[in-house]
Structures are given as C-alpha cells and as structure tokens.
Image (cartoon, rainbow, N blue to C red):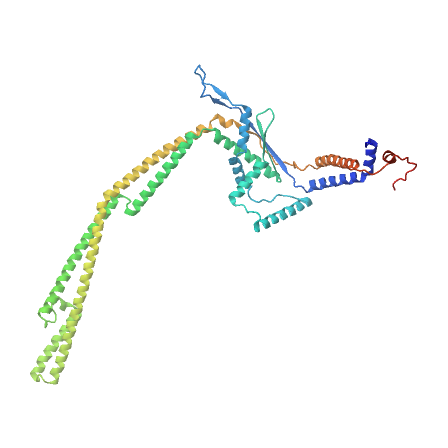
Length: 488
C-alpha cells in the first residue's frame, strides 16, 4: 500500500510540533536582534561625478575634403575608463597616505553596545599581538601596511555608473561617518588630479621642467666652483687685491733691505772682533765701541786704576811684596771679567746675526710667494671671469625657461579638458548608519525563521513513521479502532 500524506495530517503534525516552531522562531529572531544590536554600525557616504563627452581630432582617417574631422568617444567606454581611473592604485594610495588609513585609529562608539564592541576589538587586538609575538602572523612594515590599506580601500570602495546617464557614483562605508565622507571627497579630488594628469598633454611643461632642473643644477655647480676659487685665491676685487699686494711687496722689500744692512753690519763687527782676538790675544777690548758699553767701561776704568796702583806700589816696594801680589791678583780677575764680558757681547751679536738671517730668509720666502701670487693673478682673473660669465649666461637661460614654463602651465590651465570631469555633489557625513537596519533585519529574519521552522517541521513529519492518529492504525494495520485515549 502506497503511503500518502494529506494536508490535514500535515497540519496535525505541524500543530503537534508547535513548540519547535515557536522556539526556533524566537531563537532566530533573538539572534538577529542581538546581532543587529551588537553589530558595529557602518555609515555610507556617496558623491557623484559627471563625465562630459569629449571629441578628438581624427588624425588617421581625415575626410577627402581636407577639412578637420573629429571622433566621438563611446560614452559607455568612457564611463568604464573613468571608473578604472577612480579605482586606480595612484588615486587610492594618495588617499591612504593623506588620511593615514594605514595607521590604527580609534572609532567613536558609545553606549553599552559600544562598550561591548570595544571590549571585542581590544580582545581581537590582543590576540593579533599575541599571534604576532609568537610568530604565527607577521607584523607589517610601513610599506606593507600602506599596501594592505590600499587593498582594503579598493575592496570597500563602490564605484558604479548611474543608469542611462554619464554620472558616476562613489560610495564608501566606514564605522566613522566623518571618515566615510572624507574618504569619498578625497577620492573624488584625487581622481580629478589623476584624470588631468592622464588626459592633459604635459609634454611641453615637462620638457621645460626638466630643462629648468638641469640648468639649476649647472648653475649651482658653477656657483660652487666660483666660491671655491674665491676661497682658494682670497680674491674679492682684482684691482684692490693687486694694489694691496704691491704695497705689501714694497714694504717687504724695504724691510728686507734694512735686515740685510743690519745683518752686514753685525757680521762685520763679529768678524773684526774674532780676528782681533785671534791676532792679539792680550787685547782686552778689541773694538773701541765695545768700551762704550756701561759695564765694560766700568771694568776698564777699574782695570786702569789697578794698573796705576801697581806703578805706585813698585815705586815703594818690590815685585815680591804682598801689596804687589794682591794687586796682580785683582788685575787678573778684572782681565778675566773683561774677556768674559766681551765673549758675552760677541755671543749676543752672533745670536742677533742668526735672528737677522732667519728674518731675512722668511722675508725672502714671503716675497717669493707674493711674486708667485702676482704672477697667478691674471690666470685667476681669467678663470673667475669665465665662471662669472657662464653664471650670467645660465641665469639668463633659466629666466627664459621659467617664463616658458609659466606660459605652458597657463596654456594647460586653459585647456577645455579641464572641464570634462566635474564633482556634481560632494559627500556629506551621514546621520544614520546604512547597516545594520534593525526593522529590515527583523522582518527578513521573521520570514527566514518561518520558512526554516515550517520546512523543518514538514521534514520531520515526512520522515516520522510512527502511528499518530486512528486512521493510521486502520490504514497500515487493517484493524478497526473502537476507542482512543487522548494525549495528556
């Protein structure tokens, strides 16, 4: 006998499992309610950009008439191209770096649910730090953190065209409403810059920019060379420098002449003293001008007085007398003092002679150096003149290039393609979160829980082979039922 299940039997089985239906619905709705309450809110900001149509000159297939022709770009292709530019890596990288999206940030979250979510975030950060400390995960470097932030932004950023229009919507969700608006607006701004960088012809301005950098580098090198030459030569003004060197040279010549004269005089005096002392050893004072020295003059007077006393003693006593011997001893001592003092004067003259000779040699060396410096002045003047002339030429070229560069920038700023991409509506900080939506989640959860509970009840009823009602006994056992005891 083939088993068949009627609608009444199914409803009877469903009512028998009413507790499963109620509890399952309550569990699903409670889970959705708690999950929606604890789920961090996400705010969505959006901005729209209008893309105007562009035309280009057709350079490949000009018309037979010879006049100009234009090509109109397919709007769909153009919109898709601009979407790819918005999602390009240069745009997203600049947004990440400007807003520091690669750095950890504190998300404002209030209330009990915010405290619970904050505790969850802290636990997650602690776990991530622990796994990084034990080597399970790898800590990002600065460049890797930027790359990861760019990838997150690329996955969360929604860029889509509006239907039947040339408008592109940029949408972004973030737990911070202010940050979501900042990201969308900055993406739009950076897209405009990238759009202009791609579409505007910058060949002329880039050429002038490169030439300006090259001329500035050459000019800086020439100025450094000029400064080094001036520091090495010590030249500020050639005319004043030449006059100063000539005056100094004249002064040194006069000084050298005086030193030579004094050296010759002292040398002659020393030679004469040495010659007289060798020729006449008994001569106490070789030169008369030595006697003018005060101490030597006093010794000479004392020596003459002793000689006079010796004459008087010899008249009264013999040469063997005590008075005569005493005077002779004094005369010998005076003679020794005179000779020692003359030797001292001679050593002083010799020292002075050596000093004069050293001074003369130093003066000669200074004069030779100054003459060499004078001989190098024309060469240094020529080198400095060439450097100054080269600097003037480079400065003139630089001023011309700067003017050309400014003119090219002005020409770029007046390009019609600047008006091709316009921000239609900038993003504002949203007041309400875009997700989660409690009522929508509850409605969808109710539908989902009803469907799940009914499906589960029907499934259990279908696979239940037990005898539930009197008709089952009559159908499957072929016996008549006289009475049944209801379930209590």
